[in-house]
Amino acid sequence: MGAETCTGPVYNLPFRELYLTILAFDGVRRSASADEALAAAARQLLDEPLQELHTQAAGYQIDYPLTTTGFTGLADDGSLELPRSATGSYELSFDIRKLDE
Image 1 (cartoon, one colour):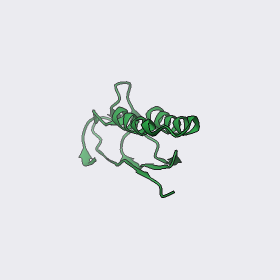
Image 2 (image 1 turned 60 degrees about the vertical axis):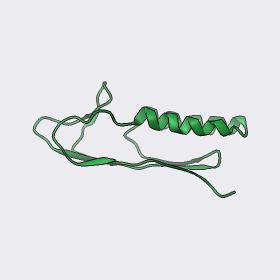
Image 3 (image 1 turned 180 degrees about the horizontal axis):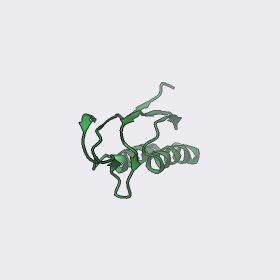
Image 4 (image 1 turned 135 degrees about the horizontal axis):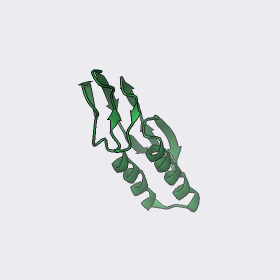
């Protein structure tokens, strides 16, 4: 998902939904270490949603590339902050797939 031109804050980015998606894969539970690895990846995405995430956990590859321009950070309400009279753009995607064993 993304937008070429933004002239104000961007709301409703799916950070929590992506977090829950990673945790849903925790249902396979092959071991406690697998649970911990997936939970750690999920926490990283939720704690630092403006940082890209590329990791392997519990036999899955998780990729969350994010590109933003013009935005200054994440506001308390979860929106991407954009200074007044500025324009910005963003693009994010999310992919989780099982690795060949």
